[in-house]
Image (cartoon, rainbow, N blue to C red; front, side, top):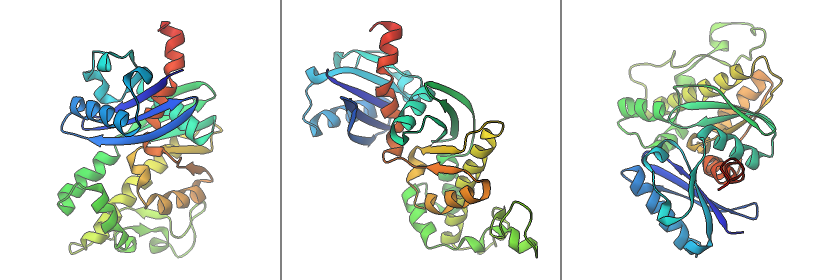
Amino acid sequence: MGIIIGIDVGISTTKIVGIRNGKVSAPIRITAADPITSLFGAFGKYLHDNDIELKDVEHVMLTGVGAAYIEQPIYGLPTSKSEEFIADGLGARYESKLDHSIVVSMGTGTSFVKCNGDEMRHIGGIGVGGGTLAGLSRIMLNTSDIKAVAAMAKQGNIRNIDLTIGDISAIPVPGLTMDTTASNFARAQSDASKEDIAAGLIHMVLQSIGSAAWLASLGSDIRDFVLIGNLSLLPQCKEVFPALETLYDIRFHIPKYSQYCTAIGAALDYNRIKKQQLI
């Protein structure tokens, strides 16, 4: 059996992985000016870096918003498309080893996919995500470089930005800890430092995503949430999500290849597509 290539095509960023004999091989990420350039750049680099020849590739699976721009086989290879939400679920399940969870895909916005065994179902989403963080950082910090914002936030003090339950109540509120955020940015002053603002922005985005994920689980018995996408790499995830775990009595998981889960899922979707289309 040859290698199955999974490619998550964004508008400017493409992620690519190979799966052979059930094992993920050296995922990479490429950024370019447009999805076509990004896709072919990533594909060529992946083959070169891993010493793979075209004849070694059994099938190429595409997913992501940029996949809509691709209508022809990649380098003449058999090529199919995987629905992005199914790819999210398959990749997160493979990486987390959890069969019963909600996948929280933190992209430009955030989507929620309920996974129950082999059933992957999109249950909603919110318009808060990496695009929100980049846009607000562009306005408030004069940069949309998320890595730079994260580094800046490490030097900031969230207590200068957010209002907590302890700030507004002398006694604990039932179900809430004294350090639970009562209002994002409520303490911010006009002369707040860029470092404090960066911390506030990241905390606001991640807290909003985590709380929305918990709300999406209400009415079910799901207690596990798998975080995927580029925002899952933010160091602040290790601060924000454990606090939400305590608050809501739930568990957040960040797999090893969290940013590549959608590409991994696309490759894994090959067998399902093969059965459906007899490709």
